[in-house]
Length: 152
Image 1 (cartoon, one colour):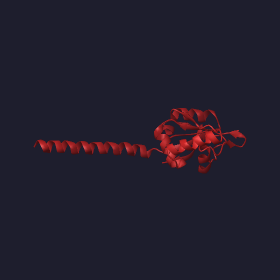
Image 2 (cartoon, helix red, strand yellow):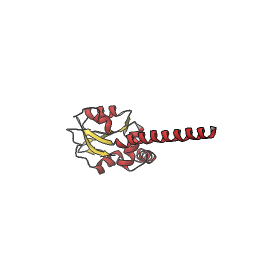
Image 3 (tube, one colour):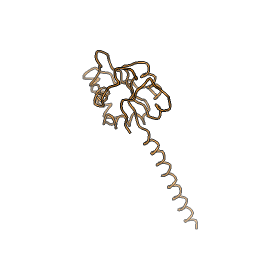
Image 4 (cartoon, one colour):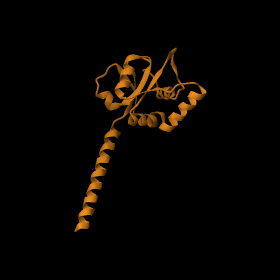
């Protein structure tokens, strides 16, 4: 009887843990990452190819003005951005920027700690581009930023 009780408790704990993990993964999976720019700014028409080029240091200007890409410091958001939008891992991304810093004397995009900071930076400057979790954007009724790309 004692063996049965231990086995039963182990099975129940395993089932509950897997349900909990599945639920949290489903919650994260449902929220996409969105690339945002100032709604009435000159970056509104950027393509995915141009977004990639900006974050990989290959496109630095829009017209004669310098583009300021900012990174979201939330790792869960940044990892989705790297994978789904840039097609890179975090390690590959850092390696690219180390090379750009050494060879081309370029500086990697600034990292802002939270989505709210990214939103504020985009609202203030028409040449700033950033990315946030889709739920962070929808939680705030913000008409001064525009989503130019979404990755699920």
